[in-house]
Image (tube, rainbow, N blue to C red; front, side, top):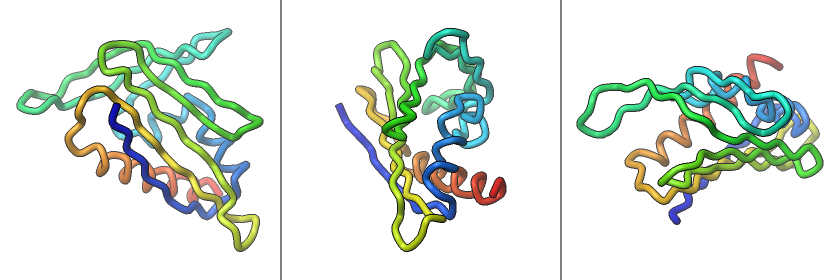
Length: 137
């Protein structure tokens, strides 16, 4: 299964970054294709709405069910969807060093399917995360 990993340094501490990114309702703010997330009560299941552009096709709005898990002790966020692609991803957080006001976030995507432009999409997501956290800080 191919994996794609990118990281960036954030101008906020690890706890602030984790608090924002561990809330599934914030996903539409930083994942460009996700437009809506509704967490189901009592578990890690979420309903999602996204806009996708399959190669050679028009934009499509798709709805689905996914899982979203936040591990407060490890400061790790994981998500994924069932189905043929076995798509899942994770965010890991580490102090960046040089003071308490910076952290590093690493985004990894795993998928059985090929995704043209996935590296650019991950870079865009990390850039958006950095901008959103800077605005909130």
